[in-house]
Length: 292
Image (tube, rainbow, N blue to C red; front, side, top):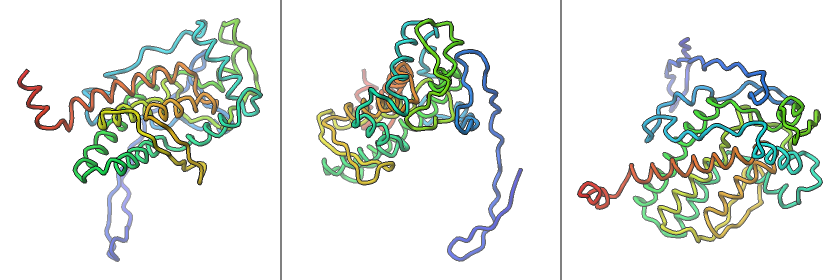
């Protein structure tokens, strides 16, 4: 459907045509393990079209798709289930004050944190404009294709979120998991999309890999701020340390199983390695590769 509206640009009234495109329909499953809408708002899933978005550097969205999540009856599943059930609940008795802070600290749009970290590193290393342009291009091409890649996997596997799994554990045929019908994550709400793999893990592993590649080191000391906790900073001595904390924060927040994040980290690293070796390669390195 085309809608014409009037936009004021430099005090001129300009007609602009907008085409609204219907998103692919998504019907949540009903079997154990299937993604279902999550409480308290039961919002419909978001970005269902992203698996079909044209990637920037990847050949196709599923190029590095992770293997399926573990079976509900496996030890991997029950271990991850019981970990998040204990530490991720809103009133956890096992979560420390620092863990609560880091869960909330990393609760914003994860790509923003990694652009801030890149900016801090660029300033500290006094990069030229051209060097900075290449750094941010590599970082954000990787993040963009990471998002396409993880949504491809999310909507392929359509795995349930912890809040659903814990409330419905009496249906999973796993004697090592026990249901809690009122279990609520620390965040109170859960992102409205399938659980596997974890987005924070993909973007953070990818960001750390790009920065480590670009600067040829991972021993940089830096601080990063949070759009969720204004005035709070957390300090790190390496890009990977920040990535690991951002990833772990999603377990503490109660929104991801550990295996979501392990798969996400591998996906992020694979995409980052592909991007930095295939695009924006310095001419002398490209020539060397061609001459091999």
